[in-house]
Length: 81
Image 1 (cartoon, rainbow, N blue to C red):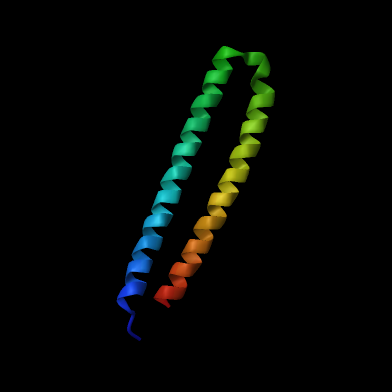
Image 2: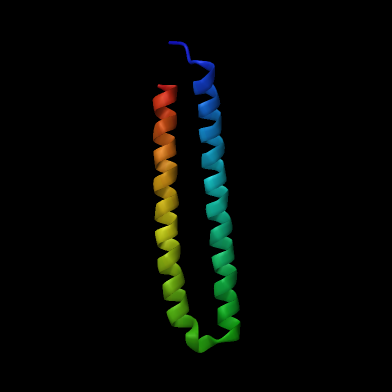
């Protein structure tokens, strides 16, 4: 089975997109971690609430990313099949 040039380009751009999403996710994780560290030092009282909210937001974000990545990987597999 031959792939058209377009599907090869599409596979590449999907792979690129997956990489971007994954590195973006990593950056998010780090910046959230830094924010939490800063909150810890600035205001210990507000820490609990903030951390809980952050982790909730981060979990949602991570799920969304994960879903996007899964979708892209599925698309990728359908091309490569």
